Image 1 (cartoon, one colour):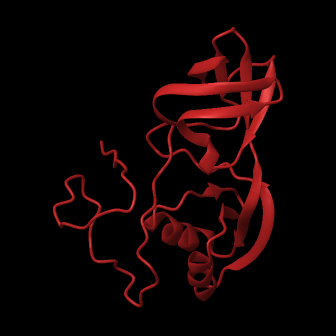
Image 2 (image 1 turned 30 degrees about the vertical axis):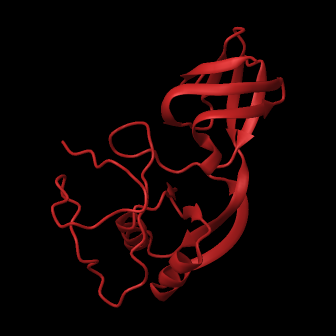
Length: 175
């Protein structure tokens, strides 16, 4: 079977095929995929987060571009700085634009954001969140639920000495 063992970031055209993947589908290490140019096996050395415009380099020399697939999102308007702070405090992937924020649909976050005065519209759009301050990659959220106390009881220091656990492994990059 044809394999893809490397990724070309922000690959230049032309491409030999295309594959549309949702946000979760763009985080992978080993998986069989079906593109417009046929099936291939992704076999990367480590779990990798792909962005719209990256390309798989196939063992036969072809390049298959990755496109962000449309998926259910919430388009958020309101006091964007305040709303973005609360979204970021929960390590939730977010697209930040001049007049709106876009996150994946989440009923718990929706209730919290509405309490903060957000106007929310449900849409189906390609989800392309910000990559993070330290370069390419994604953040991995951890749920704190809704609380009356805005402080959620632990810090995000690089040492994590307070004994809490996360639902997904992730790194905090600090200068």
